[in-house]
Image (cartoon, rainbow, N blue to C red; front, side, top):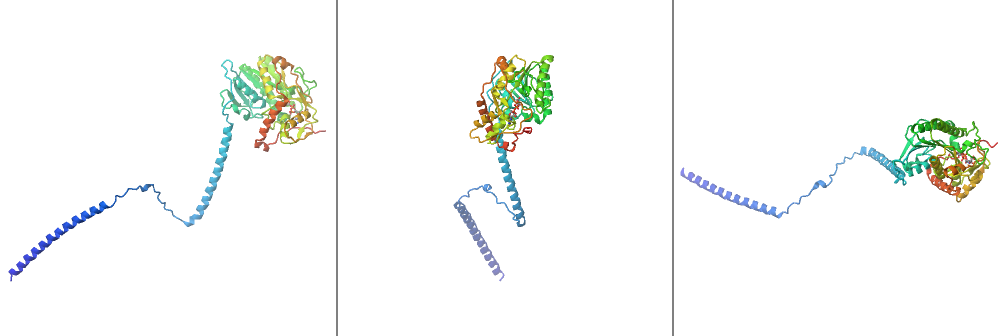
Amino acid sequence: MIRQPLKFRKTIFVICVLFLIILLFLISRKDTDIINSSKKISEDIPAVVYRDFSSIPKREHVYVDKRKMASNSAIDDNIKQELQETRAQIEQLKKKIAFLEGRIPQKYPDVKYLGYKERKRILVTGGAGFVGSHLVDVLMMQGHEVIVVDNFFTGRKRNVEHWFGHRNFELIHHDIVNPLYVEADEIYHLASPASPPHYMQNPVKTIKTNTLGTINMLGLARRVGAKILIASTSEVYGDPMVHPQPETYWGHVNPIGPRACYDEGKRVAETLAYSYAKQENVSVRVARIFNTYGPRMHVSDGRVVSNFIMQALQNLTITVYGNGKQTRSFCYVSDLVDGLLSLMASSYTLPVNIGNPVEHTIEEFAMIIKNLVPGCRSTVSTGAAVEDDPQRRRPDIAIAEAQLNWSPKVSLQDGLQRTIDYFKEELSRTTFYNNQTYMDVNVKSPQ
Ligand SMILES: O=c1ccn([C@@H]2O[C@H](COP(=O)(O)OP(=O)(O)O[C@H]3OC[C@@H](O)[C@H](O)[C@H]3O)[C@@H](O)[C@H]2O)c(=O)[nH]1
Protein backbone atom coordinates (compact mmCIF):
# COMPACT_ATOMS: atom_id res chain seq x y z
CA MET A 1 0.00 0.00 0.00
CA ILE A 2 2.81 2.31 0.81
CA ARG A 3 4.68 1.67 -2.57
CA GLN A 4 1.54 2.42 -4.65
CA PRO A 5 1.26 6.10 -3.76
CA LEU A 6 5.00 6.59 -4.45
CA LYS A 7 4.67 5.24 -7.93
CA PHE A 8 1.66 7.33 -8.51
CA ARG A 9 3.58 10.43 -7.43
CA LYS A 10 6.44 9.69 -9.84
CA THR A 11 4.01 9.29 -12.70
CA ILE A 12 2.33 12.56 -11.83
CA PHE A 13 5.71 14.29 -11.70
CA VAL A 14 6.77 13.00 -15.13
CA ILE A 15 3.48 14.10 -16.63
CA CYS A 16 3.91 17.55 -15.19
CA VAL A 17 7.46 17.90 -16.54
CA LEU A 18 6.34 16.81 -19.96
CA PHE A 19 3.43 19.21 -19.86
CA LEU A 20 5.79 21.98 -18.88
CA ILE A 21 8.18 21.21 -21.72
CA ILE A 22 5.30 21.17 -24.22
CA LEU A 23 4.05 24.39 -22.83
CA LEU A 24 7.46 26.08 -23.12
CA PHE A 25 7.79 24.85 -26.69
CA LEU A 26 4.43 26.20 -27.59
CA ILE A 27 5.16 29.54 -25.98
CA SER A 28 8.47 29.89 -27.77
CA ARG A 29 6.75 29.20 -31.11
CA LYS A 30 4.02 31.68 -30.48
CA ASP A 31 6.56 34.49 -29.71
CA THR A 32 8.34 33.94 -33.00
CA ASP A 33 5.02 34.20 -34.84
CA ILE A 34 4.05 37.36 -33.07
CA ILE A 35 7.45 38.98 -33.84
CA ASN A 36 7.24 37.92 -37.44
CA SER A 37 3.69 39.07 -37.83
CA SER A 38 4.45 42.40 -36.18
CA LYS A 39 7.46 42.81 -38.50
CA LYS A 40 5.20 42.14 -41.41
CA ILE A 41 2.67 44.67 -40.23
CA SER A 42 5.28 47.36 -39.78
CA GLU A 43 6.61 46.69 -43.29
CA ASP A 44 3.10 46.91 -44.71
CA ILE A 45 2.32 50.32 -43.09
CA PRO A 46 3.66 53.17 -45.26
CA ALA A 47 6.20 55.50 -43.62
CA VAL A 48 4.61 58.45 -41.86
CA VAL A 49 5.49 61.71 -43.70
CA TYR A 50 6.85 64.41 -41.39
CA ARG A 51 4.76 67.52 -41.40
CA ASP A 52 5.74 70.90 -39.89
CA PHE A 53 2.81 72.16 -37.91
CA SER A 54 4.62 75.23 -36.63
CA SER A 55 3.53 77.24 -39.68
CA ILE A 56 -0.11 76.69 -38.93
CA PRO A 57 -1.30 79.58 -36.83
CA LYS A 58 -2.44 78.52 -33.48
CA ARG A 59 -5.93 79.38 -32.64
CA GLU A 60 -5.89 81.91 -29.92
CA HIS A 61 -8.03 81.20 -27.10
CA VAL A 62 -10.57 84.00 -27.10
CA TYR A 63 -12.29 84.64 -23.93
CA VAL A 64 -15.62 86.20 -24.70
CA ASP A 65 -16.83 88.35 -21.92
CA LYS A 66 -20.20 89.72 -22.91
CA ARG A 67 -20.08 92.47 -20.29
CA LYS A 68 -16.95 93.90 -21.87
CA MET A 69 -18.17 93.61 -25.43
CA ALA A 70 -20.09 96.92 -25.43
CA SER A 71 -17.20 98.97 -24.05
CA ASN A 72 -14.79 97.24 -26.45
CA SER A 73 -16.83 98.28 -29.46
CA ALA A 74 -16.89 101.90 -28.21
CA ILE A 75 -13.07 101.77 -27.95
CA ASP A 76 -12.94 100.30 -31.46
CA ASP A 77 -14.99 103.24 -32.77
CA ASN A 78 -12.64 105.71 -31.09
CA ILE A 79 -9.62 104.00 -32.56
CA LYS A 80 -11.23 103.98 -36.01
CA GLN A 81 -11.96 107.68 -35.74
CA GLU A 82 -8.42 108.44 -34.57
CA LEU A 83 -7.11 106.41 -37.44
CA GLN A 84 -9.21 108.34 -39.91
CA GLU A 85 -8.09 111.65 -38.44
CA THR A 86 -4.45 110.59 -38.53
CA ARG A 87 -4.84 109.48 -42.14
CA ALA A 88 -6.34 112.89 -43.03
CA GLN A 89 -3.45 114.63 -41.25
CA ILE A 90 -0.93 112.50 -43.10
CA GLU A 91 -2.62 113.39 -46.40
CA GLN A 92 -2.41 117.07 -45.51
CA LEU A 93 1.24 116.76 -44.57
CA LYS A 94 1.97 114.93 -47.81
CA LYS A 95 0.37 117.77 -49.76
CA LYS A 96 2.34 120.32 -47.77
CA ILE A 97 5.61 118.49 -48.35
CA ALA A 98 4.86 118.25 -52.08
CA PHE A 99 4.10 121.98 -52.14
CA LEU A 100 7.29 122.86 -50.26
CA GLU A 101 9.37 120.53 -52.40
CA GLY A 102 7.96 122.31 -55.44
CA ARG A 103 9.27 125.57 -54.05
CA ILE A 104 12.80 124.34 -53.46
CA PRO A 105 14.78 125.44 -56.47
CA GLN A 106 15.71 122.39 -58.47
CA LYS A 107 18.39 124.25 -60.28
CA TYR A 108 19.74 127.74 -59.81
CA PRO A 109 19.62 130.18 -62.70
CA ASP A 110 22.87 130.18 -64.67
CA VAL A 111 25.44 132.14 -62.73
CA LYS A 112 28.59 133.43 -64.36
CA TYR A 113 31.87 132.33 -62.79
CA LEU A 114 34.03 135.25 -61.72
CA GLY A 115 37.64 135.01 -60.64
CA TYR A 116 38.76 136.11 -57.20
CA LYS A 117 39.79 139.59 -58.38
CA GLU A 118 36.58 140.35 -60.32
CA ARG A 119 34.15 138.90 -57.79
CA LYS A 120 32.75 141.49 -55.38
CA ARG A 121 30.95 141.14 -52.07
CA ILE A 122 27.83 143.21 -52.51
CA LEU A 123 25.43 144.15 -49.75
CA VAL A 124 21.83 144.96 -50.76
CA THR A 125 19.67 146.46 -48.03
CA GLY A 126 16.00 145.83 -48.74
CA GLY A 127 17.16 143.04 -51.05
CA ALA A 128 14.02 140.97 -50.49
CA GLY A 129 11.79 143.82 -51.66
CA PHE A 130 10.31 144.54 -55.09
CA VAL A 131 13.23 146.47 -56.63
CA GLY A 132 15.92 144.94 -54.38
CA SER A 133 15.14 141.36 -55.38
CA HIS A 134 15.41 142.16 -59.11
CA LEU A 135 18.77 143.83 -58.48
CA VAL A 136 19.91 140.79 -56.47
CA ASP A 137 19.03 138.52 -59.41
CA VAL A 138 21.27 140.47 -61.79
CA LEU A 139 24.17 140.69 -59.32
CA MET A 140 23.94 136.95 -58.64
CA MET A 141 23.86 136.13 -62.36
CA GLN A 142 26.94 138.29 -62.84
CA GLY A 143 28.73 135.99 -60.38
CA HIS A 144 29.10 138.26 -57.36
CA GLU A 145 28.67 137.31 -53.72
CA VAL A 146 25.45 138.93 -52.55
CA ILE A 147 24.39 139.62 -49.00
CA VAL A 148 20.72 140.56 -48.65
CA VAL A 149 19.66 142.41 -45.53
CA ASP A 150 15.93 142.85 -44.93
CA ASN A 151 13.59 143.28 -41.97
CA PHE A 152 10.66 141.94 -44.06
CA PHE A 153 8.46 144.93 -43.26
CA THR A 154 7.52 145.12 -46.94
CA GLY A 155 10.06 142.64 -48.37
CA ARG A 156 9.33 138.93 -48.72
CA LYS A 157 11.50 135.84 -48.57
CA ARG A 158 9.59 134.54 -51.58
CA ASN A 159 11.25 137.19 -53.76
CA VAL A 160 14.71 135.70 -53.22
CA GLU A 161 13.97 132.10 -52.29
CA HIS A 162 15.25 130.87 -55.65
CA TRP A 163 18.75 131.71 -54.37
CA PHE A 164 18.46 129.96 -51.01
CA GLY A 165 21.41 127.65 -50.50
CA HIS A 166 23.51 129.12 -53.31
CA ARG A 167 27.09 129.51 -52.15
CA ASN A 168 27.24 133.14 -53.40
CA PHE A 169 24.04 134.11 -51.59
CA GLU A 170 23.38 135.09 -48.00
CA LEU A 171 20.17 136.39 -46.41
CA ILE A 172 20.29 138.31 -43.12
CA HIS A 173 17.09 139.15 -41.24
CA HIS A 174 18.07 142.50 -39.78
CA ASP A 175 16.65 145.99 -39.33
CA ILE A 176 19.24 148.52 -40.51
CA VAL A 177 18.04 150.97 -37.86
CA ASN A 178 20.50 148.90 -35.79
CA PRO A 179 24.20 148.79 -36.76
CA LEU A 180 25.38 146.00 -39.02
CA TYR A 181 28.89 144.59 -39.24
CA VAL A 182 29.61 142.75 -42.48
CA GLU A 183 32.36 142.91 -45.08
CA ALA A 184 31.39 144.42 -48.43
CA ASP A 185 32.96 146.07 -51.47
CA GLU A 186 29.73 147.74 -52.59
CA ILE A 187 26.47 148.61 -50.84
CA TYR A 188 23.13 149.22 -52.53
CA HIS A 189 21.08 150.89 -49.84
CA LEU A 190 17.45 150.32 -50.87
CA ALA A 191 15.80 149.55 -47.53
CA SER A 192 12.69 151.66 -46.92
CA PRO A 193 8.99 151.29 -47.50
CA ALA A 194 8.26 153.01 -50.84
CA SER A 195 4.51 152.85 -51.29
CA PRO A 196 2.66 155.89 -49.88
CA PRO A 197 0.11 153.88 -47.81
CA HIS A 198 2.96 151.81 -46.36
CA TYR A 199 5.31 154.64 -45.49
CA MET A 200 2.43 156.70 -44.07
CA GLN A 201 1.31 153.78 -41.95
CA ASN A 202 4.32 154.11 -39.63
CA PRO A 203 5.88 157.53 -40.32
CA VAL A 204 8.33 157.39 -37.40
CA LYS A 205 9.68 154.06 -38.59
CA THR A 206 9.98 155.48 -42.13
CA ILE A 207 12.03 158.45 -40.93
CA LYS A 208 14.21 156.24 -38.71
CA THR A 209 14.93 153.86 -41.59
CA ASN A 210 15.92 156.71 -43.89
CA THR A 211 17.99 158.62 -41.33
CA LEU A 212 19.38 156.20 -38.70
CA GLY A 213 19.43 153.37 -41.22
CA THR A 214 21.30 155.49 -43.74
CA ILE A 215 23.79 156.65 -41.08
CA ASN A 216 24.45 152.99 -40.20
CA MET A 217 25.04 152.07 -43.84
CA LEU A 218 27.27 155.09 -44.50
CA GLY A 219 29.21 154.25 -41.32
CA LEU A 220 29.63 150.68 -42.55
CA ALA A 221 30.79 151.92 -45.98
CA ARG A 222 33.36 154.15 -44.25
CA ARG A 223 34.64 151.31 -42.01
CA VAL A 224 35.04 148.73 -44.75
CA GLY A 225 35.90 151.16 -47.57
CA ALA A 226 32.86 150.23 -49.67
CA LYS A 227 31.26 152.28 -52.42
CA ILE A 228 27.61 153.01 -51.52
CA LEU A 229 24.57 153.79 -53.67
CA ILE A 230 21.67 155.50 -51.89
CA ALA A 231 18.20 154.88 -53.34
CA SER A 232 16.58 158.30 -53.24
CA THR A 233 13.31 159.23 -54.91
CA SER A 234 11.46 161.61 -57.20
CA GLU A 235 9.55 162.54 -54.07
CA VAL A 236 12.44 164.80 -53.02
CA TYR A 237 10.91 167.18 -55.60
CA GLY A 238 7.62 167.12 -53.67
CA ASP A 239 4.72 168.62 -55.65
CA PRO A 240 7.06 170.12 -58.25
CA MET A 241 6.89 173.67 -59.56
CA VAL A 242 9.30 172.78 -62.38
CA HIS A 243 8.37 170.30 -65.09
CA PRO A 244 9.94 167.94 -66.09
CA GLN A 245 12.17 167.66 -63.06
CA PRO A 246 15.95 168.00 -63.52
CA GLU A 247 18.37 167.04 -60.73
CA THR A 248 19.16 170.71 -60.20
CA TYR A 249 15.61 171.43 -59.02
CA TRP A 250 15.51 171.78 -55.20
CA GLY A 251 11.92 170.67 -54.84
CA HIS A 252 8.69 171.74 -53.22
CA VAL A 253 8.01 169.59 -50.17
CA ASN A 254 5.60 170.13 -47.30
CA PRO A 255 7.85 169.36 -44.29
CA ILE A 256 4.94 168.57 -41.97
CA GLY A 257 2.56 166.84 -44.41
CA PRO A 258 1.65 163.12 -44.46
CA ARG A 259 4.31 162.39 -47.08
CA ALA A 260 7.08 164.24 -45.24
CA CYS A 261 8.29 161.14 -43.37
CA TYR A 262 9.37 159.71 -46.73
CA ASP A 263 10.14 162.88 -48.74
CA GLU A 264 12.12 164.56 -45.98
CA GLY A 265 13.60 161.23 -44.86
CA LYS A 266 15.05 160.76 -48.36
CA ARG A 267 16.21 164.37 -48.53
CA VAL A 268 18.11 163.87 -45.25
CA ALA A 269 19.50 160.59 -46.61
CA GLU A 270 20.93 162.53 -49.59
CA THR A 271 22.36 165.17 -47.25
CA LEU A 272 23.95 162.45 -45.11
CA ALA A 273 25.49 160.81 -48.20
CA TYR A 274 27.22 164.00 -49.32
CA SER A 275 28.26 164.79 -45.75
CA TYR A 276 29.98 161.39 -45.42
CA ALA A 277 31.50 161.87 -48.87
CA LYS A 278 32.92 165.26 -47.93
CA GLN A 279 33.92 164.59 -44.35
CA GLU A 280 34.75 160.85 -44.37
CA ASN A 281 35.74 160.42 -47.99
CA VAL A 282 33.06 157.79 -48.61
CA SER A 283 32.43 157.06 -52.28
CA VAL A 284 28.68 157.73 -52.79
CA ARG A 285 26.16 157.45 -55.63
CA VAL A 286 22.62 158.83 -55.41
CA ALA A 287 19.76 157.57 -57.62
CA ARG A 288 16.50 159.52 -57.66
CA ILE A 289 14.07 156.77 -58.55
CA PHE A 290 10.81 157.72 -60.28
CA ASN A 291 7.63 155.59 -60.34
CA THR A 292 8.59 151.98 -60.98
CA TYR A 293 6.44 148.90 -61.59
CA GLY A 294 6.75 145.23 -62.48
CA PRO A 295 6.45 141.66 -61.20
CA ARG A 296 6.97 141.07 -57.46
CA MET A 297 5.05 144.19 -56.47
CA HIS A 298 2.86 143.05 -53.62
CA VAL A 299 -0.85 142.67 -54.35
CA SER A 300 -1.40 144.84 -51.27
CA ASP A 301 1.31 147.33 -52.25
CA GLY A 302 -1.22 150.16 -52.51
CA ARG A 303 0.50 151.96 -55.38
CA VAL A 304 -1.40 152.81 -58.52
CA VAL A 305 -0.07 150.05 -60.80
CA SER A 306 -0.83 147.14 -58.49
CA ASN A 307 -4.17 148.61 -57.41
CA PHE A 308 -5.42 149.22 -60.96
CA ILE A 309 -4.27 145.83 -62.26
CA MET A 310 -5.81 143.94 -59.35
CA GLN A 311 -9.06 145.85 -59.77
CA ALA A 312 -9.16 145.27 -63.52
CA LEU A 313 -8.44 141.55 -63.16
CA GLN A 314 -11.35 141.16 -60.75
CA ASN A 315 -13.78 143.46 -62.62
CA LEU A 316 -13.83 145.80 -59.63
CA THR A 317 -14.16 149.57 -59.90
CA ILE A 318 -10.84 151.19 -60.81
CA THR A 319 -10.39 153.85 -58.14
CA VAL A 320 -8.79 157.04 -59.37
CA TYR A 321 -7.92 159.33 -56.45
CA GLY A 322 -8.85 162.94 -57.13
CA ASN A 323 -9.90 164.05 -60.62
CA GLY A 324 -7.30 161.85 -62.37
CA LYS A 325 -5.60 164.81 -64.07
CA GLN A 326 -2.39 164.33 -62.03
CA THR A 327 0.42 162.78 -64.07
CA ARG A 328 3.08 160.10 -63.55
CA SER A 329 5.78 158.49 -65.70
CA PHE A 330 6.24 154.75 -65.20
CA CYS A 331 9.51 152.85 -65.53
CA TYR A 332 9.71 149.05 -65.82
CA VAL A 333 11.77 147.45 -63.06
CA SER A 334 14.45 145.89 -65.30
CA ASP A 335 15.23 149.33 -66.77
CA LEU A 336 15.57 150.75 -63.28
CA VAL A 337 17.96 147.96 -62.25
CA ASP A 338 20.11 148.61 -65.33
CA GLY A 339 20.23 152.28 -64.36
CA LEU A 340 21.29 151.49 -60.77
CA LEU A 341 24.08 149.17 -61.97
CA SER A 342 25.32 151.77 -64.46
CA LEU A 343 25.33 154.45 -61.79
CA MET A 344 27.27 152.30 -59.32
CA ALA A 345 29.84 151.52 -62.02
CA SER A 346 30.21 155.13 -63.13
CA SER A 347 32.40 157.82 -61.65
CA TYR A 348 29.52 160.33 -61.54
CA THR A 349 28.85 161.21 -57.92
CA LEU A 350 25.98 163.74 -58.02
CA PRO A 351 22.28 162.68 -57.91
CA VAL A 352 20.89 161.09 -61.07
CA ASN A 353 17.20 160.75 -62.08
CA ILE A 354 16.33 157.17 -63.06
CA GLY A 355 12.88 156.91 -64.62
CA ASN A 356 10.91 156.66 -67.83
CA PRO A 357 9.94 160.08 -69.26
CA VAL A 358 6.75 158.86 -70.97
CA GLU A 359 4.06 160.72 -69.04
CA HIS A 360 0.34 159.90 -68.61
CA THR A 361 -2.49 161.27 -66.53
CA ILE A 362 -3.76 158.75 -63.98
CA GLU A 363 -7.13 158.82 -65.76
CA GLU A 364 -5.44 157.73 -69.01
CA PHE A 365 -3.42 155.17 -67.13
CA ALA A 366 -6.60 153.58 -65.76
CA MET A 367 -7.92 153.16 -69.30
CA ILE A 368 -4.60 151.74 -70.57
CA ILE A 369 -4.73 149.01 -67.92
CA LYS A 370 -8.42 148.31 -68.44
CA ASN A 371 -7.80 147.82 -72.16
CA LEU A 372 -4.88 145.48 -71.53
CA VAL A 373 -6.99 143.07 -69.49
CA PRO A 374 -9.11 141.07 -71.94
CA GLY A 375 -12.82 141.11 -71.15
CA CYS A 376 -12.41 143.59 -68.29
CA ARG A 377 -15.80 144.94 -67.16
CA SER A 378 -14.44 147.41 -64.58
CA THR A 379 -15.68 150.97 -64.52
CA VAL A 380 -13.38 153.86 -63.65
CA SER A 381 -14.40 156.11 -60.77
CA THR A 382 -12.91 159.37 -59.55
CA GLY A 383 -13.09 160.31 -55.90
CA ALA A 384 -11.40 161.90 -52.93
CA ALA A 385 -7.88 163.23 -53.56
CA VAL A 386 -4.85 162.14 -51.58
CA GLU A 387 -3.39 164.92 -49.40
CA ASP A 388 -0.28 166.59 -50.86
CA ASP A 389 -0.46 164.32 -53.93
CA PRO A 390 2.11 165.63 -56.46
CA GLN A 391 0.21 166.89 -59.50
CA ARG A 392 2.85 166.44 -62.20
CA ARG A 393 5.84 164.20 -62.40
CA ARG A 394 8.21 163.36 -65.19
CA PRO A 395 11.96 162.85 -65.03
CA ASP A 396 14.49 164.79 -67.00
CA ILE A 397 16.94 162.01 -67.77
CA ALA A 398 19.56 164.02 -69.67
CA ILE A 399 22.22 163.30 -67.03
CA ALA A 400 21.55 159.55 -67.02
CA GLU A 401 21.80 159.50 -70.81
CA ALA A 402 24.99 161.52 -70.91
CA GLN A 403 26.84 160.18 -67.86
CA LEU A 404 25.61 156.57 -67.73
CA ASN A 405 24.68 156.03 -71.34
CA TRP A 406 21.39 154.82 -69.94
CA SER A 407 17.80 155.20 -71.12
CA PRO A 408 14.76 152.95 -70.54
CA LYS A 409 14.11 150.17 -73.07
CA VAL A 410 10.83 148.52 -72.05
CA SER A 411 7.64 150.11 -73.42
CA LEU A 412 4.70 150.73 -71.08
CA GLN A 413 2.64 148.24 -73.11
CA ASP A 414 5.18 145.40 -72.73
CA GLY A 415 5.97 146.14 -69.12
CA LEU A 416 2.32 146.29 -68.13
CA GLN A 417 1.58 143.04 -69.97
CA ARG A 418 4.32 141.23 -68.02
CA THR A 419 3.05 142.76 -64.81
CA ILE A 420 -0.55 141.78 -65.53
CA ASP A 421 0.59 138.18 -66.16
CA TYR A 422 2.36 138.21 -62.81
CA PHE A 423 -0.69 139.50 -60.95
CA LYS A 424 -2.92 136.95 -62.67
CA GLU A 425 -0.77 134.25 -61.13
CA GLU A 426 -0.81 135.98 -57.75
CA LEU A 427 -4.59 136.10 -57.89
CA SER A 428 -4.75 132.36 -58.41
CA ARG A 429 -3.17 131.91 -54.99
CA THR A 430 -6.21 131.35 -52.80
CA THR A 431 -4.76 132.98 -49.69
CA PHE A 432 -5.12 136.39 -51.26
CA TYR A 433 -8.89 136.33 -51.07
CA ASN A 434 -8.72 136.48 -47.29
CA ASN A 435 -6.52 139.54 -47.33
CA GLN A 436 -7.89 142.16 -49.69
CA THR A 437 -6.09 145.16 -48.23
CA TYR A 438 -4.54 146.45 -51.41
CA MET A 439 -6.69 149.55 -51.64
CA ASP A 440 -5.70 150.79 -48.20
CA VAL A 441 -4.69 154.44 -48.60
CA ASN A 442 -5.19 157.67 -46.66
CA VAL A 443 -7.43 160.06 -48.54
CA LYS A 444 -8.70 163.46 -47.63
CA SER A 445 -12.32 164.43 -48.04
CA PRO A 446 -13.27 165.82 -51.49
CA GLN A 447 -14.25 169.23 -50.05
O1 LIG B 1 -5.57 153.26 -56.32
C1 LIG B 1 -4.92 154.28 -56.62
C2 LIG B 1 -3.60 154.49 -56.22
C3 LIG B 1 -2.97 155.66 -56.57
N1 LIG B 1 -3.60 156.60 -57.30
C4 LIG B 1 -2.91 157.82 -57.74
O2 LIG B 1 -1.87 157.44 -58.62
C5 LIG B 1 -0.77 158.32 -58.50
C6 LIG B 1 0.49 157.51 -58.22
O3 LIG B 1 0.39 157.01 -56.91
P1 LIG B 1 1.39 155.93 -56.32
O4 LIG B 1 0.88 155.63 -54.97
O5 LIG B 1 1.54 154.81 -57.25
O6 LIG B 1 2.81 156.63 -56.28
P2 LIG B 1 3.25 158.12 -55.98
O7 LIG B 1 3.65 158.71 -57.26
O8 LIG B 1 2.24 158.88 -55.22
O9 LIG B 1 4.47 157.89 -55.02
C7 LIG B 1 5.59 157.17 -55.48
O10 LIG B 1 6.48 158.03 -56.04
C8 LIG B 1 7.72 157.59 -56.45
C9 LIG B 1 8.36 156.51 -55.65
O11 LIG B 1 9.61 156.84 -55.18
C10 LIG B 1 7.51 155.90 -54.62
O12 LIG B 1 7.36 154.56 -55.01
C11 LIG B 1 6.18 156.43 -54.32
O13 LIG B 1 6.30 157.25 -53.23
C12 LIG B 1 -1.14 159.28 -57.41
O14 LIG B 1 -1.64 160.45 -57.96
C13 LIG B 1 -2.23 158.59 -56.62
O15 LIG B 1 -3.10 159.46 -55.97
C14 LIG B 1 -4.92 156.40 -57.71
O16 LIG B 1 -5.50 157.25 -58.36
N2 LIG B 1 -5.53 155.27 -57.33
